[in-house]
Length: 139
Image 1 (tube, one colour):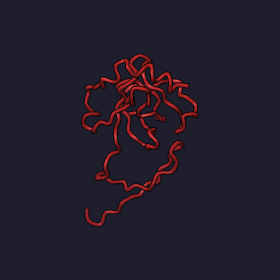
Image 2 (cartoon, helix red, strand yellow):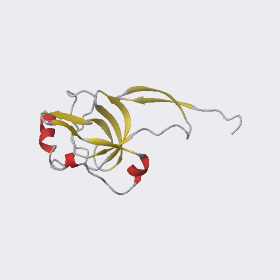
Image 3 (cartoon, rainbow, N blue to C red):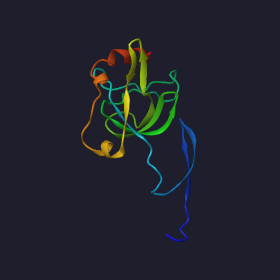
Image 4 (cartoon, rainbow, N blue to C red):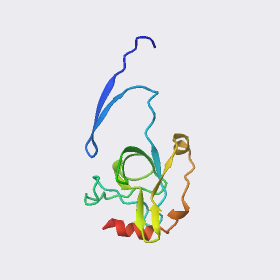
């Protein structure tokens, strides 16, 4: 539209701090989306209220198969907003865990079309193999 003004919205996230002003336009790329691929045995992965590993744990885990939208990403930790599945509406999770045999992937990136579909994929690393490693992260 000719002569249309772009509105700027100032956003604030308690855990992530202020976000840069973003134009309120449809052509702005959507934030990355992630799917939980671990947590079969423990019915999901550990979520913390803040970015640090010392922050309080949420009472509920983020369910396996849940799809989340990335709000922030720092040092291998993802601040998310729940789009589909069970778990806290927002929180911080580790994307992978380090273990003696190598890294265990807890979440995988998905494109918007795949995230919107009803099919929930899994990763071979998520089928029970990582659930013991998650207990190392719980402490």
